[in-house]
Image 1 (cartoon, rainbow, N blue to C red):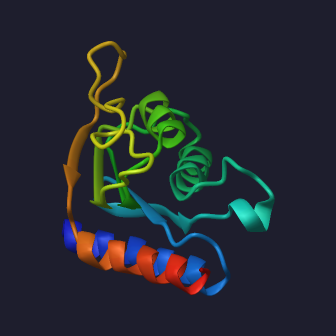
Image 2: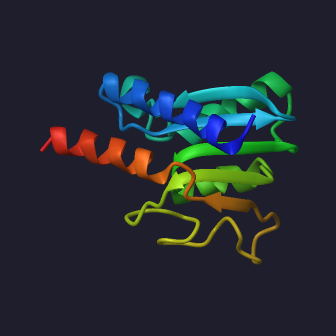
Amino acid sequence: MSDLQFMEMALQEARACSEVGEVPIGAVLVYRGEVLARGGNRTIRDCDPTAHAEIVVLREAAAKLGNYRLAETTLYVTLEPCAMCAGAIVQARVPQLVYAADDPKGGAYRTCFALLNSPKLNHQVEVTSGVLSEEAASLLQSFFAARR
């Protein structure tokens, strides 16, 4: 499968979040070409400020693999990860990240911070951005516009 196909899966997860009132961000973690985990934001449902889409799939994938190190994986997410999620990605040693839309209010790859490729950290992540960015941004904009 291609980056576009995996990102479309992440967008499906984001749409499902929107339908239940969660901020529509979805993620898919791929291991050796196969989907290992997929999910979306669950902060409201779980009453857990750390239940961002990325954290949800990293936890599920680590449990399935029986290893907190997620080598040979690619994480697809619909929004540039925040500092918390970027830190978790680094700690899990995820080698590749593909994300859709930039997050100008909290992104930790290039918009607000540069955590994922900082030479000061012991792991750097290869990042591809902009995959289906218009779709992801539109979904977020529609979600927040409906709540104003």
